[in-house]
Length: 164
Image (spheres, rainbow, N blue to C red):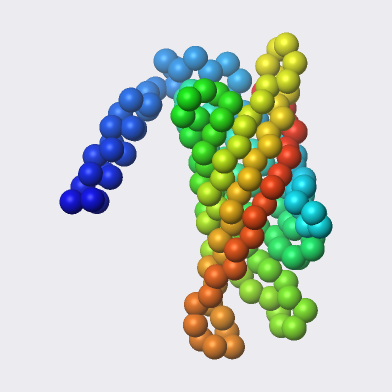
């Protein structure tokens, strides 16, 4: 019964938010962000691309690296802007590789829910500032014990970008 109720609520949510791109009032559809991690002492860099589908949904990609943990990742992301064009809730899925110094490292699937703000800077709505926080889960197979394991990391990131 819970699954049926959740499916019904998801359908209602999508029914009121999805419509053709021609009817959407979106002027600049593409955004490229360059970001850096701010959670001390972890330093990270990333590049993101985001494409607005309509006023409330966008899809994108993210490639980045964290230097203290020696982690690289590539993800596909979706973002939902529920109340405005500023606050968003996102979900990313992709691959991550963590290098450790005792073995060859490990690679696995990463899932990263996130929240943040996309703040327009300037009069012409061209530049954006995007602070966000993501909780990254890395699911991988442990070769030493033949069991699945998980690694978790919090990414606090500040991004600056341009719309075009």
